[in-house]
Length: 314
Image (cartoon, rainbow, N blue to C red):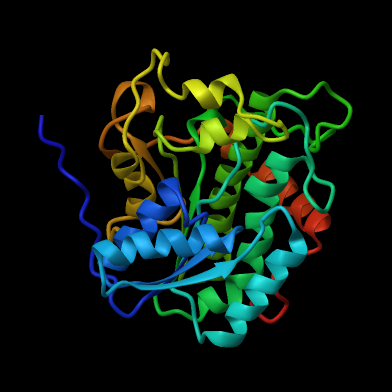
């Protein structure tokens, strides 16, 4: 059966930032945004890997406008340095794609700032980055923020009494699901904040279904001296349907670029169990739609990161 790929609308003249742009969905999103004419800042933790990905994309699209900049979302000082640098260099930012993430390390690990690694890297880092870049984003004529969640958000719970999983027994799946539910809540609540304040901003969520990237295998080896069994076996014995990164990135690209998208919406695969297939508008879990809980998470995130909505934007 022929797979019809999503065609990214023309992005000529637009500036985009894509986190985690050196591999997986981040690299695919970067490539297709650049191919459509966007100038893309590849925000990566390891510059050498970012430069290698940039070279790969340029080999296919020689006219691509790509710049590699370092950011470590597990280090708030790095987030601040990246955002300050971008604000100093650019008049506006048309598109922020919060894509980077870490998935299910086998034991509890922490960020530079002492947060549980998945909650810190997947959620608190992007939260701080987004709020620090908001003045730059809102200076664009038609700004958009696309945030990657996961199907795991459907089983997630925000453990307000123990967000960092310090008192309860660490569970890799539980902590990952909490972080991705937090991503979805953030995207939803940011859309409401934008509406309440009259901002011309689209905040849109997406999830990739079960896409074959290095996220699952790399996460399983974090903190180990040698690759885990999951890393070595990869997807070989997986019974569930999976899809390639080209298709798996399309919900994120749709959320980031399609003119039909409305703020607060959420996109994912239309096929079996939401794991594979073409992009469709999907219904978020009810746990992402509780205004009081969403506002509580936002407030707690401001406290933890020390980053709030800039006072000079109303």
